[in-house]
Length: 498
Figure (cartoon, rainbow, N blue to C red):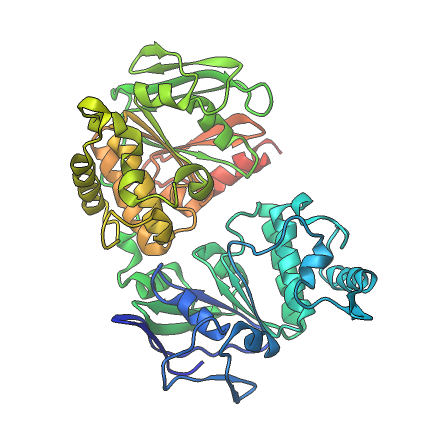
């Protein structure tokens, strides 16, 4: 791709961007939300025409990808973060959807199943081509998308945040498939915010910032400090902020959890959370971190266990009771369980405090709600032209900040943050870290769940590690030494007991 620019009215989405990808390589494309990554890929896939002066070459020959069908004919396929499968159809039917093999003018299901089975066998899957997609896991559905691309003889596959919803085992399986695709000469453009993935699988990395091309790094040149500097224009030293004072034994206990159990996974979990402390819950997927947080918040029913807030027993049987008591919870799934995507930013921010705006006669004080939303947007640097647009139109990082704004409007004493930076770009992560640090400085107690160990050791004061539904141990900093990722992983995997 040479000198690609794209404007929408007065908005410049891309400016003179060039990208070269080799056969058989995984080329990572990184940058903050709004940097232009998705627009560039939409130009490649034929969803957008580039502005005059730009061109796309395949095998050195200029091609026109003016629509998705032409792009597909040139061997270009895109696997989006939100999978585009029909759940009521089989894997085979999805693989050949719109391009079904036919016999005597009718869809040939036998040939469809046979050819789909051959493609899936190449990917080493364990499910049948006749399996209904609704019965497959997210990782298996991802493989169906890849099989669909291979059915169209794709030579260039774009993967947009492919591991966001996958377990660690499914991610490892995807990486094995990617290695197989590369060995067959297929070029992969991989969009991700997860640096550890990029270090693991990328051959080269290109970075976009502010709609323009910043540069490309070879695998041997990769480093966290260099990538962060390229993406956000500042070095890694300002990335994690921990200016609040870590709590000591004299600091009051804000939340005390004793013997919390759900009768299934979570078993007899106990801990104390001090005011002004950032306490991290770490552990592998399935260890019970989110389940424990939901029990504390009253989203799920506990069969045993007690809670104390500021030394006083509390009984919490629902999220409403938790909010009334001063406990707020940020869900890990902002789209399904957090935001009202088709509602205004203002309504999303005010959802937890509607009673404040009640007026005589059952009317609502919209002016007060709008002022509150505008202030929250300014305080949290939510980038949107106004609070009167739908939350679903925002980038991932700004959506997450809208959820945080709603949470903070309830004036909580304890905040539970479940994967607070999942699916957001590096710049938004840095802003969220600063926000967490600011809350701790105000004395708010924070319980944070994160699967990213650099994030855990970067902002937490103390770490509780879960394994098999129980708290396996605690990791603390000592004698000027930071929290240890190795110690966390030993507890998470059970290596400490070998």
